[in-house]
Image (cartoon, rainbow, N blue to C red):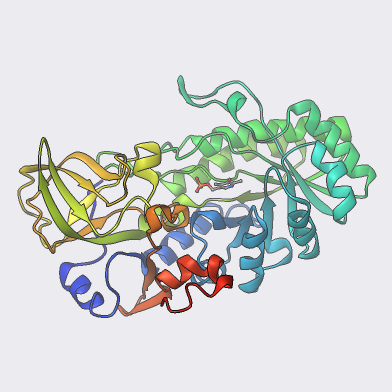
Length: 421
Ligand SMILES: *Cc1c(COP(=O)(O)O)cnc(C)c1O
């Protein structure tokens, strides 16, 4: 799929008059269109709900925007719960899918009446001491082994720290039933960033079959199946994007074939997508501030891995467009780098690009999820601003950039940094 920026050079030249680079920017129009497509894809299931994975892009403005489209929040920590509450999102609009959960997190999730999705059977006794048993609760399943799709190993659940074995899940449901839980959910996340329309349908089939068996063995009411996240996006221009309508239809077919014959067609389908919801609709915009010619050609940016960790952490590909040179010949080869004292701080290695001049604006695609949120402060680098490109073309600051004062804030009790802005 051709990668096109949602901003032109002229727009960026205008934006930087108020908001200097680097910044992450999100495209409201595309976000809303995509959200509506997701809902349409699962409209066959009247209780369908997407719980946006807050960790992917924990910006209240975006979380509220998605809430306006009918999405809830998937939280996994105390502060993510607080963020949801601050957005006015509470109760069954929150799915709490955490692991290695501290007791104060469980307590807050309980107080907010969130749907709690237990990662482990040992958490039940733990929760019993800090939270209240609710009518609707959930457990996370891990089938072990490899997750294979069309003869290809997509991921290795047996190596994943998440979820319970089948036996544990059954035992957990019995325990919860004895505590008064009436409606049960089953959740699993078996493969990440799948660019394959078959992922959700295959996962759904596994969980639907399990649901039928669990009901037989325990007699509990299964109220929902949570397909979690993992629906991917085409980071690379030669990848085919997922077709969410085909994905929804695949899940529907599994539903008709497995759940309907068992008389379990009141089950709600829930999802917790992050990447698919925002990934393509955010970009990191930076400026080239240095050239370096040694054994390779380097273009150095005013952004670094602290603004976008995925290339350094996973060797992930992020497409790059030099704004204003969209159609220029890609006749140069660069390592595009940030300024961390870490050699893996490279947004791209040996990338064919047009000639990059000092001052050129560099548009790094697909940073809308797991981009800003994975940021950190190594080398004293500061987190960037986040901007929203509104449907009317205006630009709204939805998070200001950090200042040195923010960086020193946790030390400030000495007064030593009082003069720093
Ligand atoms: C990270 C995560 C998600 C979202 O994953 P994406 O790949 O962004 O769709 C959903 N649920 C849980 C429990 C997660 O940890």
